[in-house]
Length: 405
Image (cartoon, rainbow, N blue to C red; front, side):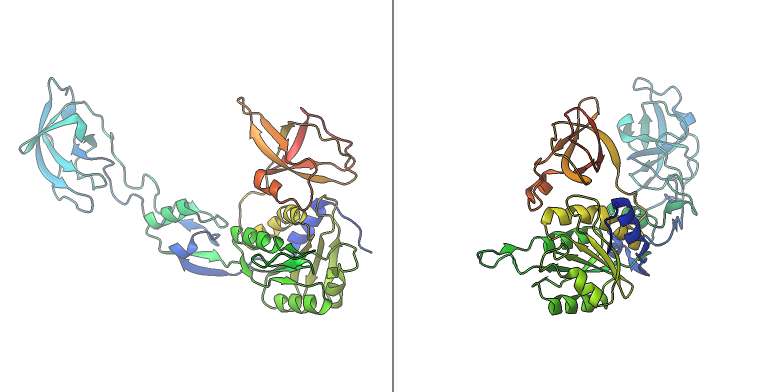
């Protein structure tokens, strides 16, 4: 008989069974949204040459001493450089080179003056402002020097990271392969969205919620759909999924009702039962087993319960098998904005809305104090869980409570 365990222990047992996926090298566009599998060092200096950050003139700062609109310094313009071009002319005293943004700064120049601080003439330019060496001057290697650490193994490759890699001339990077998950939702009452309503039937939301959440986490989803509460159908689907998936998620059939068949089916398939029931509400009937080395996480069929246990139990597993180095969920203390009068014989994760006041103090409001396990509306309005300890007799407005973002 498996005993109820604490959330932290359940999470640890699940993560222990996760296996990191393989590595593949993909081009930059395909790498977007993936997790980097190796450290990346700058292959070149960035910028790779001394560069002008603006339209203006390259010159020697010494030639600008005392310059003002009333008494401008006058310099001879010896060349013009556009972005993508370069000049073989060397700037010496009394000379300047016209520059466009992004163009190389020619040899001999030690500063750049912006166009707005000059008056151009035929073959010459009037300098209206004093400058110092290094003004408006982007030095070679100012952003990255060849060999500098750029990104680390485990970093998520978003738009900013891809842009930095492209700017360094990197065309392809090693990433972890996307893990593959199979989702199986069970229940005679379930029907697909788009079909006609029928007495006693409900639309399957868990399958779509879990599938989309997995995709948001960088997981490839195998479409398996919904299944009736029939042993043979469930067993066949799980056995087939175990041959293709890195892990399996099921919803429904994990409680103690006559048609809650998941535990029996998994045992008959030879799965190792790791735990059944977690000290958390909603979602306490969660079952974790391992079938032929494949983790099988079985969640409650109640939509809110499935959502809570997905975030608190599955996300750490996904973080491990995707190779992500992103920090885990943040926990902080917030001031409760209303009373909560229910007793909590088991630990509760209440959906809440985290905000802050003008002083930056964290505030949290309970979304739907009843927290009906079938009410998906609260998911739309919440951004955190209020973590209520086992045995809590109630909470009062103004109390500090732990919040999981």
